[in-house]
Length: 368
Image: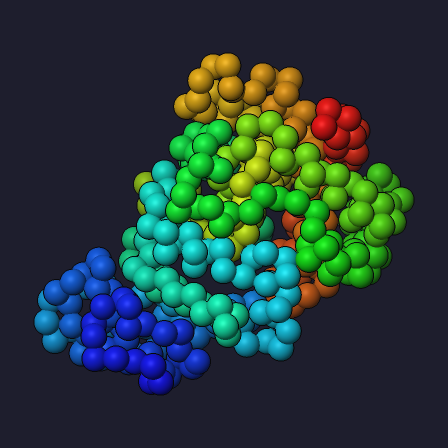
C-alpha cells in the first residue's frame, strides 16, 4: 500500500483507499499501542457496509503475540460530495480526533485501537473493537428501550458530562472540540431539505408541527436552540445520542457509539435527544419527568453548579426541536431504514408539541 513503511508503529499508518489495501503489516501497526507484541499474519474482509461512512469487519490471525479475533474499521464515505459536506458542518474528523486524543471517556463506548486523520484528502480511519465480541446488541427506533435502560443511559451521560463539567474549554487535548452553533455549514443543507421532509411526513405530524414552514423550523427555532446551547455550564457532548447510536451489553449497560458529532455545550442536548428518541411516545410521557430528575441527581458536580429542577425541565423541553429537525431531513434519505426514521420523527414531533418546545426555546434565548 502506498506510503506504508516497514515499521510496525502507529506512525506508519495511512488511511487505506480501499479495504483491499488493509494488509497484515498495516493491521499490526494499528494494534501496536494496545497489543505491542502482536504480529498479524492474515486479514480477512468479513463484512463491508459503505454508506454514510465506509465500514468493514476484519478477521485476524496472528504469527506472534495475541490480539482481537475481529476488528471493526471505519473511514469516511466515498459518496461524491459527502466529505465536503461533513467538513463544512464540522463533523468530518471529530470521532477520529476524539479517539486519537487518548482521553478517557467515563461512559460505555467502543475501544479504539488506532485513529488516523488525513486532512489533505478529507479522510480518516478508525480501527476499533468489534462489539459483537462483548455480546453487544445494537438498538434502533423499532426496538425502543425500557425505562430502566433509559435510566442507565442517562446515568452514563451524567458521568460523561460530570467529567468535563465547566472545564471542557481548558482540556488541552480537546481544544479542537467546537461549540454547537448555528453555522452556515449546519443550516444550509437543512434549509433546502426541511420543507420537503415536513411535507413527506405531514400525515404523521401533530398540528403544531404541520403549521411550521421550513424557514421557521430551521432558521428560527433550531438556530435559536443551537445558540442557547452555549449558555449555562458547558461540557463534552456526545452530540448525536439517538437510539440508533446505542447498544446494550449482556449486563444491561447502555453504550454509545458513533461520536462524529461530538461538541461542547449544554448537557440538556444529549439528555433530550437520547430520552425522547429511545422511548415510545406513551413511555416518554409516562417517565420523562422522573428521568430528567434521575439524570440531574446523577450529576457529580458541585451543588451550586447543578441545574435546578425548573432549569433542567426548561432546557429539556427545548431539545425536541433538534430531534425533529434532524429526522425530518433524514426521512428523505436512504441512510436509515424509512420506518425507523419515521418512528423517530413521530417521537420528536410529539415531544415538540406536548412540551411546547417553541416557548422553551424562546425563554432560553431571552436569557442570553
